[in-house]
Length: 305
Image (cartoon, rainbow, N blue to C red; front, side, top):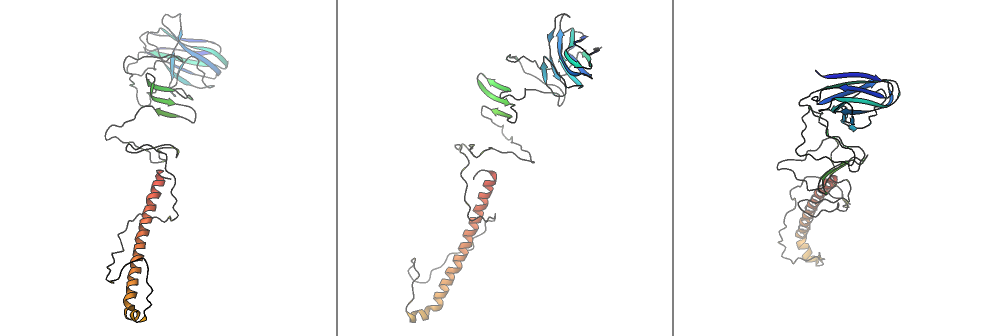
């Protein structure tokens, strides 16, 4: 049968549960009409000497060893590892007004996750084997302190592998070694807001073992029309049957007789040149627009300026 006791306190004092040392967990609930209450959870192996116990708050996962200060009139449930103890008590050290109602019960639970071993600040714990969580979904919690530049650090000697920063508005996880994904595993991103790789243009990035660089300077697109169709060529090779010598000058045909005889052919030659030039210009324009689209896309990705 589970051990259970209840009690109400309007001044300093204790509500003490007597239990079997085989009971692995003790649950403590506080409720009532109290104002500004403080209490500690303590346990004893012999019924006379008490020491503070680690308690896990059920709704937040916070672990406390020492003074617990719930909000006024709050109902809270705490879980306490208590195997080997014969007494567990909730001892009120301060209460400003009202009544604090305590309900304590203990039993031997199998398969229920216990509160992780907790040490005071500056102390350390060494585990000789793995740490296993076997609770239901949302019940397995590894709680770390808030608003610390180094709230949790996974190290090998002095080498930091993974550091958790909980500084307000500056929360981050710092990876201190190379990060490798197993083959055929991917980075899955959300589809609502999206994810940035690099949060400033001065941060350096490289692909395929290239030396990381900051984002290149911006392109100036004086001509900014863009399309994404790379069209076929519309210009073609000109066949030169003129028999003349090509140069970079259009000659002045001053001989009136010769000019009159060859007038139509001369006009046709210039018409051919003009038509092919216009087609070539269209081809160049198409290439420029396609290049603008490439630059626009790279700018949208943030890879170029």
